[in-house]
Image (cartoon, rainbow, N blue to C red; front, top):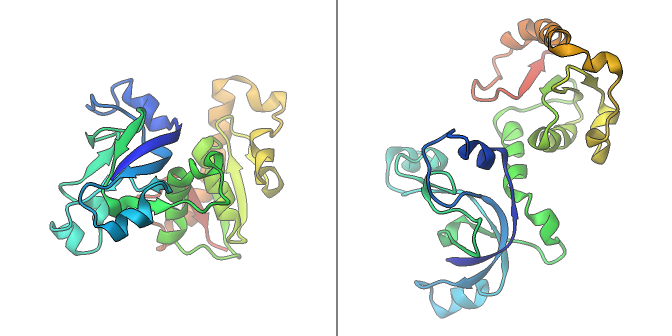
Length: 231
């Protein structure tokens, strides 16, 4: 489907690509909300359903025939292209193209400014898809950046005791993690004194949690952003 980009988000991956993070030389960008303008291979019914509608899109376009796809893991497809990252032009342009099965309709009451967060929010929600977090769990989230804030808000839905250790080593409580309060959290002078002090504080927090986390068989090794402690 051909999609006209209405609004695009800038991801940390986009910035890292400009610094040589991955050998990609095409158009970057993968967070977007757009409007379907054409579906060359669609019949009249599909065209009537999609043309003119706002959509967000999954970034991995899979082949559907490799062992990974056939075993229900299309995001690990051996032949996949990745929007704005690997072998597929991204969305920092007027138009982009994705398979129809990658598109999701945006509800009419969701504005573009919210819909553009669909892809990073989906990434945040993958944590609770892979690990069942109980209300009795204690969770340490390392990092309070853009994705970290989305992860914090999704983890709070579990009812777990959530703490966030930001890049300055400051522990933020659940109250700090509610919506915009996280971005505006006040740091004291003690939190900001030198790289050595920051590193020691973060190391101390991780030392307290790592032993309990290693005992948790529920931890997926691919999830490095969240450390769960046994209740």
